[in-house]
Length: 294
Image (tube, rainbow, N blue to C red):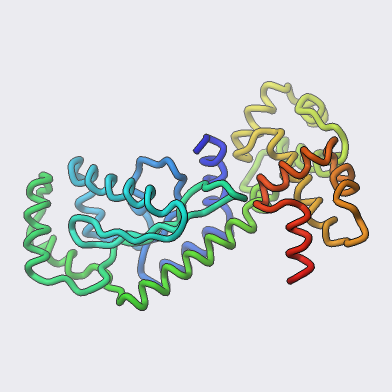
């Protein structure tokens, strides 16, 4: 996945809708949840709300951390099309649900660090041996306490938690474009003014230099700042603004798709169709038909 996809995940993670969901999911299930990009070399739940103390302890050792990262890599490779659950060598389960932007896989919603059935003494003994092999130095009594205090979800409850993640991943896919366009997370005033200018002139042939001049900055400074704050380069952001306007216009059955394309600032119908499908995951005609059948 390219850097743009990573920036989109970062923007979504900082959005109010994601943060509210993360808090509600963790409080309800007792499990951590994370939204991570496709290419990530970090443990997704480390430092998160409701992180399992047992997992937090063993993540401090490099060899055990490497084993956990290998589990995450396997999970990412198997969950590109649909939700998957895998068990780590210590018997805890992790689940990943794919998140898409249009047709593009941009990341995963993940939860885990839980058992699907109550562990026994034999399982704990095997875990202790693995931890010793990994060089984890900790009080066995403390490890026992944390291991057996790990959250246990019955298969039915676990499946329900995964279903919630699937529903939210679908919702994130639907609203991601609006979140990206409208995100205002303590952004600098110059970016706020730039967004307002883009909204007012979306049908014009906008250029980065023109917008930079309108907000009294150099093109070089504006380009870097805009990408840093929004997570998108200027051209991608303008395309998203225009697509949002087009979605509203498609509600009017009396407007032809070609009219809408030029109304929102695209210079060709072919380009409009290609950009719309890349962002929304459907062509304008398919999107309109879906609205009509809803």
